[in-house]
Amino acid sequence: MGKKFSLFIVALLALNLLISPVSAEDLLKTDAIFGTPEIDAEKDDIWDGANVIKTERYVEGSDAAWAEVRTMWDEENLYVYAEVHDGSLSVKSENDWEQDSVEVFLDQNNAKTAAFEDDDGQYRVNYENKQSYGGVASADNFTTATKTTDFGYVVEAAIKLASAASEGTVFGFDFQINDDKDDDGVRDAVIIWNDSSGQSFQNTSGFGELTLVKEAAGDETPAAGEEGEKLPNTSTAMYNILALGLVSITLGGFVLFKMKKRTA
Ligand code: BGC
Ligand code: CA
Ligand code: CA
Image (cartoon, rainbow, N blue to C red; front, side, top):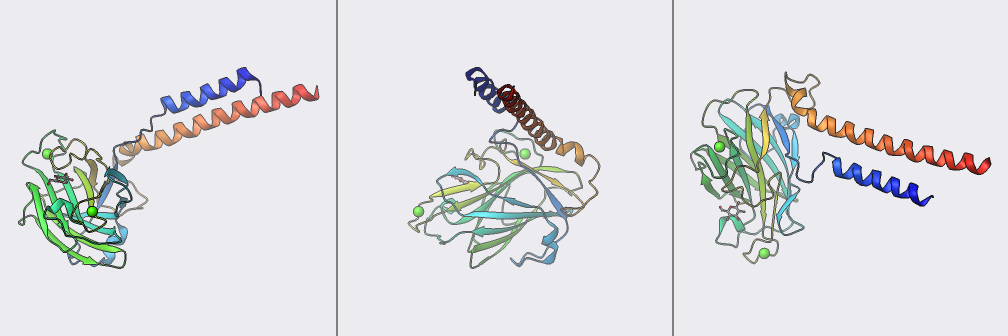
């Protein structure tokens, strides 16, 4: 390949990477479906229609336990059902956050403040169903059930909301897993859905976002405004397709040009 042309292709690819709107720490969003599950750590059928999110961002360590998390709401509560994949369970540490546990972070006015406000809470529960709290969280607004399974443990929780919830409301939301892998009482890994800053217990600005919707996941008719909210993802995908197309056409053109030159 001609030196100049190779350089051109490399420059094109670099430019594509540079101006691509995809960043490593995109703000993650999910929808909570409407319904009322029983808090017993059993996966009622009602959970089948819920969106599933995954904890994939490291706060600390590596090879952490991870979870698939489903959310649901009704006027009074936000519900969470989490399946935590954790090969060895430990509550050895005296610090609640170093025990094998999950934490829900909830910013009910989604104000993304650098310090917790009155509406912000850190709701923690270990796999033995021992709760601990930060911010507005307390035994009065946090109901949980847990059970151990062959893959680790399940947590089902209800968080009582400060005011009656309604469709379309957006909460700041995050979900963290604490993992003591070798049962020595020292937490080895922390993994979370959105905010990898490690500051979620005192700063709500990094939380992901959860929208309360009425329809179940995969429902064909989007609620009003939903399409607009999803636009960034769609436009990102479109952009990547266009950019890839452009690079392919240029490359293809070049190969054709070279072949023609050779046969001429
Ligand atoms: C954090 C810990 C912090 C604790 C405070 C946890 O979410 O991971 O680093 O000390 O909250 O409760
Ligand atoms: Ca808040
Ligand atoms: Ca450890």
